[in-house]
Length: 229
Image (cartoon, rainbow, N blue to C red; front, side, top):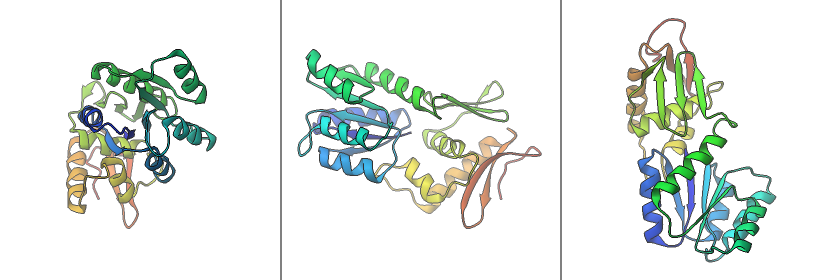
């Protein structure tokens, strides 16, 4: 999952980024509301973690602009404002959840999982393709009842392909799904990740097919195999 974090306190942001990355998510971080609004216009995200007390553009204004554009992106507000009127106002603006600072990372992670579980695949927390089953918020996969051992990057790759199982996913879309702004994924790195995922899917009845010049397609195989091309 790709998450936008809008938080101007760098120490808090670093802890949140580390927590989300440990959970296998790609995280883009901005330090003011103007950058957050621009990022939300230019990129697709699965979750927004939004501080209210942002410079340039207040978090409440960022949220209001987001909802005025008709976007149903899940939003978790994090703020030091703990008064009831603030909570009611932000929820009325369209926030999905509200967490008051300081908070424990374990609670933050649980709320992120809950929001992603609700939003994943149009409200379905699991995806299934043949014998392959994915728990998107939990970052777990199985073939029949056997767990599939995947790294965070391999799961992110499988997730990106599975969410578009009915259409081709381009290399650019895969890079967008797998990397933060400050990370780089070379063509060779993407090829290696695809090769390793194909190897782990071998015998699952599902494979990754190369569509020359266009990208990749996750599909059920007529016969057991790696699905490489």
